[in-house]
Image 1 (cartoon, rainbow, N blue to C red):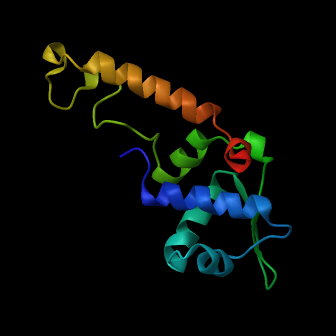
Image 2 (image 1 turned 120 degrees about the horizontal axis):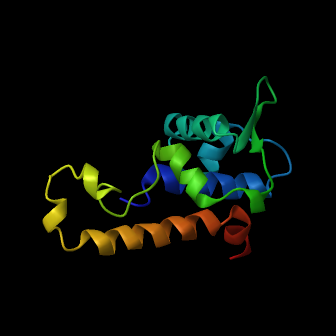
Image 3 (image 1 turned 180 degrees about the horizontal axis):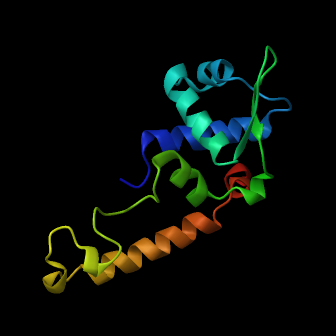
Length: 134
């Protein structure tokens, strides 16, 4: 699946954080976005680990963007959340690594591979700033 619930919540969180003047904690974000606090906390930690968010500890701790919105692309966001690049199909990116060993007779792999490339490029070029403009 291309966009999972975790990726959706990550993007929603980034939008809220981009508009916030101060860092926000996971509890505040959870309430504002109607997302489970424990699930959201894992998402925010993944984004911080990928240096997309900055994490602040303590009583007034929370999260803020670690980069300007134009320097946060959706491919990086989704890859940090999913642990791999988002895929349109459950097929290997290489015909040589086909899990079903049927790559040589698969007539749609070239099309799917080309589609995946276009989607990867689109996500790499789509920044948080672009989403904030819409």
